Image (cartoon, rainbow, N blue to C red):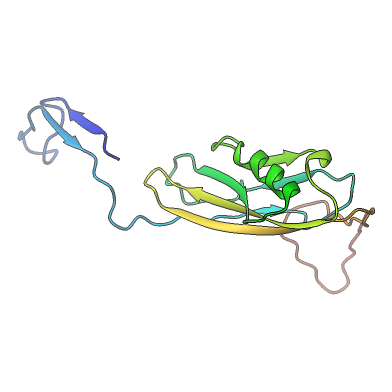
Length: 162
């Protein structure tokens, strides 16, 4: 947006059957009046134990029109000092990073906080989503299902949970 597009003379014509070619031209790419917003998807564990890393994944976000999305990570506003440090860490994540892992030592225990993700396209359209995370000071049980994210179970089928 705002960049020039230079067209070389005699390279574009109106129809394949005609001989009407355009001469040299330069146009400025205008912003789209109502760009289609992307779809922001944020996944991660909502409950962490004291030794668990915080893993956040926005790679299922879509709507970039084939171009890379930009990711802006942060926390919902908070005045707790431990949250400020975490917010600074998230804000320092590069805009091209769709998945983030923060070591357990950088995530304060005994706190509930809200991770906020803003996904933007090259046209400036954006969408925001969030994930509320609680990190307990004591270990928590963890159940993890291994396999595809979509499962269909029919009566009589076996399901194994590890």
